[in-house]
Image (tube, rainbow, N blue to C red):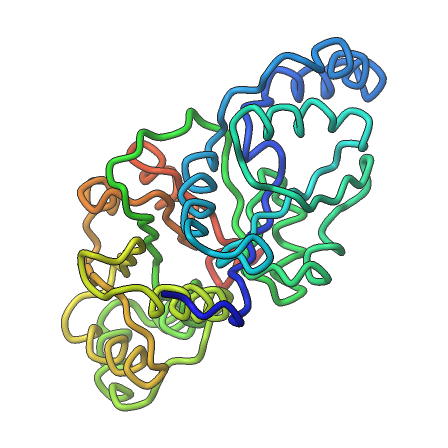
Length: 302
């Protein structure tokens, strides 16, 4: 069983990723904060429907089963631009759905990202792209989730998939590819196959997830399963494998797709969420699974 003295995995989420609040958000954009506040108070007892991150949050919190209440393995924290007053509907919905979320920051319209680091978050998920970029700049793994219907859960396991370059690793490979093309990229990776890649913005989150995963039985019995889903192909696979070995990180599955569309493979894996720096890949993946855009690296500059 997990070590009761180990630090929990901490995930911070926005209210619009946890619940479907698009109607009230559209009202806010159309008529302003006062109309939005009046709407939330009027519907205070109306339970919000699950949002895009709801299944992920439920599976994360389920990892606390059997753990002491004072020493959870996973903690989910709400980070919201609502006020505490208008946020009462959110907490009523949290209670209704039986989610063990006890900590929150309500910024009343101000940017809430400064509170993410003091909470010790390993990951931040939001629909607000600027907050995500600011969290990444502060050294916290973060991704933008576009509002969508919550995907159907395909497995009892928590399944998380990652792109490699500019997510788990830095964007060195993407920079070489953009400057010199695929042939230059392949030659560069062969020449540097024995040199570990530098860590990207999700290196810390991957470390924290691996520590949690390593405390459970390995293999199919584990409640957590991870996958690398990358456009890389042979011979660019070797450096990735050696880097993960150097880091002491176990990824359960690795898919080297050589440029094939990722969506069908993510669906086959049954990902609860997928992280990628390419907006093109996120648009494709969203047809199959929940997907988070990581606005980092050369693909997101300019």
